[in-house]
Image 1 (cartoon, protein in one colour):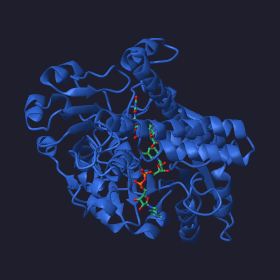
Image 2: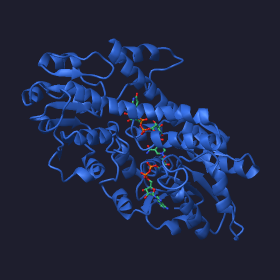
Image 3: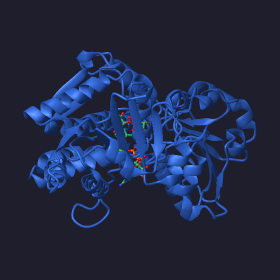
Image 4: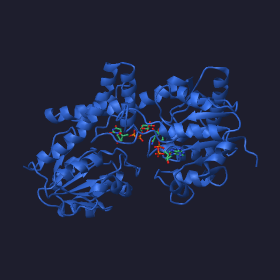
Length: 460
Ligand code: NAD
Ligand code: UGA
């Protein structure tokens, strides 16, 4: 069969895999290839055990794989045949040199760009799918177009807004798709080709076009605003704990104001995930590099508040448990950074587990999907006799002095807490870092309950 377009995605991660699977499923007329340097990852994409856990993903992959969706490690061949190349490689925070700890590390992106130049024989559209600093397209355009083969590469920005755990829903029915280009005739023509891909299933009014710099910046700003809402409500959770106000009541009330809106106002033990912290720090770095110190400080405070919330959670545990957790068994329910994913990148549970281990607690990590990643995150402690990894929450809680909810998995809401209580040490504590449990019921069972931003329920 002759395909209408040949689309390539470089980077088969949390974004590249699901995004391309949905494009392929929606557009059987296009050939969609996803490549990666990580052979194990590609093998997993070609198997029944996909490399990432995401509800609904397997069904979408199965529908298109082998028909018009292909996963491969032959990067050069795939670049050569593609008309349109999405680049979705990782862009972590730089860990060395100038901008270390804040700026985006663009080495993977640049390597990819250089490889595209080396292999290509005809003009191509190159799309930034990764989240990148504003004006990266300029640098990429220079690298790509400094070739002596007379090939023209048009660089567009099409940032991805999916959230993990709901990636397939988000891709099937996005709030918007953003495509930024240069406003030259070539830029606008390339942009219309990308609009055409999404128009196969996304209503036209949800496909937003802009200049390339606005597109790059909008992605960073969207994540900064989302994270800022969480830090704002988390800051208020601390004040609620001092004043007997209830943060869930405050969230509900302010969220009913349509100018504020009700989503992303759930107080938590802190936001995690691979992107919020990285993207805000990147924004901070960009502002600093333009001399906008006040703007940089404003956004940096969102990250500082998140660190404070994690520290505060451990301090609450310590204080409640008579100022020591040394030798005490503490079961962490959940390790993923949010429910419905096995991803633990920047999960608040990592920091909290480490702080509890530093306090010499005996920590039991429980999670339905994230234990393999948890073992990697806590590798320096894995051989310690003070850490255990147990999938079954009942086994994790047995003999524990406290349980602490780290991830809002639905399954934790309906556990048999009477059974758990009867297997625990006394006094038994619950610290609900997600406010998902029925606190009154737990108190009546006999637990001492410490929700976030709500009055504590204690038997002493
Ligand atoms: P990821 O680490 O899961 O995947 C990136 C993949 O790129 C890896 O498999 C890696 O092996 C591969 N790679 C790196 N260099 C390569 C090269 N030279 N050639 C081929 N493959 C290469 O990362 P991710 O979570 O998919 O994020 C990718 C980008 O998307 C980041 O910029 C991130 O900020 C952005 N983003 C992520 C999410 C999310 O939910 N995870 C959502 C929106 C945007
Ligand atoms: C986030 C954004 O929501 C996506 O739009 C964006 O594409 C993505 O980052 C990215 O660029 O990587 P994600 O990190 O997958 O998606 O998940 P979120 O649902 O945003 O949750 C992030 C963190 O905030 C989680 O730890 C979650 O538990 C926490 N959170 C979320 C709260 O603490 N309270 C809330 O009310 C909402």
